[in-house]
Length: 314
Image (cartoon, rainbow, N blue to C red; front, side):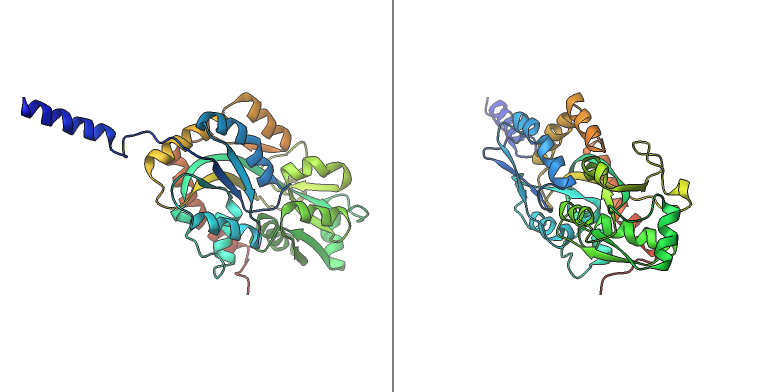
């Protein structure tokens, strides 16, 4: 009898160990968006919070923490407690690109973030301010060779900055990068004529396309029937992923529970339709496959930046 009881106790202990128990949050979960309100990351996070909240049984709150092109908010999550209550709406610019261009500011190791679930992929659209006398990429290149033009970005190392520098290298022109705190302020700058150009995220372009001159898509194929830059003689492809990430060493039961909740939301037809209308492609993946993708994305961008001769900021 003692042997039976001992065996039963051991079996119960195995079942109840943290490694096997399902994690359920007991207080609100925060998603840190490392950019100001109104940008593509902010909109993406707020689109999925209700669905995730229903699945977790707790409120899911969005907190904007902008600064340094996404680095400030990204580092805050990197140093947060790995308990499942502080997450990051991360993007490839702060995770995969910024460490190569701003190594002194990125005091986090991108490969140590725990991938929870991908959210979407965003295409970049090259636009010109109202009144700039260009209608296509060829006319823009010709103008840029005669006069110094500027473009707005949402910080050094951001997707907007890298898109601009990659375009400069491919088109053999010189452009001045004017960084702002986020994509939304950068878009307002081009709308207001403070800068000439912007490499605008698809979701923002959907909102502002009637107020700017659209020149081309930095994608392998047409986006909303916008001709690609490659079709116009400048071969540049820059796309960005956005995803939910957790601090390093987040326990597996927490990761599994969060992955299930976010992944289920991203497969809902209504959510897919919302992202499509916003100008992005919803993504889905296993947690393991997505983790491997992030690990491969960091060295991939190192090569892209080196091939385009985009160097670390001084």
